[in-house]
Length: 236
Image (cartoon, rainbow, N blue to C red; front, side, top):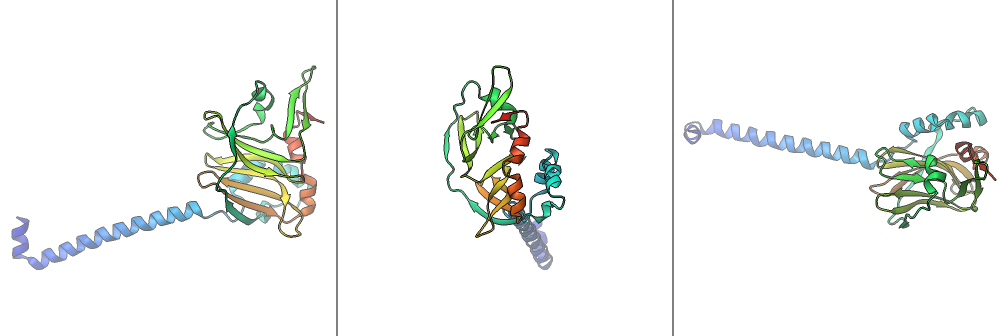
């Protein structure tokens, strides 16, 4: 029947066919544009500390804490200074001793789906209970290491390692794929030590570093918020 109609009205069939081809092409192009836009959205970094990270820092009390030291403190003054990809991160077996979760459990930072956690403290501070039941901690050395642990697979991945003078004060999950760390490390050239926020995208192993150009504030905060975070532990 369609063949007869096309034989009788060839011009109309040609117009209908061209309209169908154009419609399919438009839908394909629109889908490609949408895909490109989604891809761009997931690969371009935020140029400033994200609202989710700021909310986490504020909820934890850090924003109020730092504003007591520096009333002019402003998250919008952090700038993206560099980004890089880690081809490989040191991964080792996770073999905690029998007291690990007792001593460090309440300080571990679990992902929203609870499948992994950030270990901020076990490398840096020996935490235990004394004979009277008080929590005490002793510094393990001048270096700082933060690890990402997958207890199901029994693997521990080193997220960051800093030498003397660098600190990681706190950490939060933005979602199951992104982590933010807060601390102090050297800035570029002669900038001195700067308050820093590291953002890590797990699927691509990409880091983004945001820093605040105020060495005096960094000097006041180095190691101090960690003590506040561990305030129920007497650190000697």
